[in-house]
Length: 183
Ligand SMILES: [Zn+2]
Ligand SMILES: [Zn+2]
Image (tube, rainbow, N blue to C red; front, side):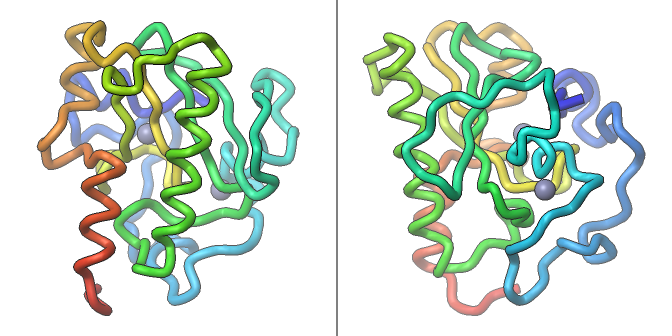
């Protein structure tokens, strides 16, 4: 079930993923808490993957101990990786300025994993986050897809630039940089 929102989001962006329906972000334990971070949620599939408790999902080499990287179980492109903090962190909407370094590290890991897998044209890469409520997994995760020029029809939709359900890593960093203590 490391699944991903992919299929469901494509058909109807509002649809909850294959997992149980989720309450609004505010009602979730991890939703928008001041510290945003730290800890482990045994019900969260990405928390379990990060602690190697999901034998079906192999972790790829990652240069940072506080991040993990693995393949998306439903690849939307020939290369499709997810970069995830080990500690449970809420989705990209709950991030603040102080999280910019984490996001940058996630991007770095994304670039490295592509290079390790012999994909070197970093201009032909799509990296970003699903904007709530269009993510079925609340644990912060960066999608790394390549080649961006070869995304299939559904993937072009699901990971569309300048849509209201997907934000690229650069756009997120910009947004965090200009944000005060909003939300
Ligand atoms: Zn988690
Ligand atoms: Zn996602």
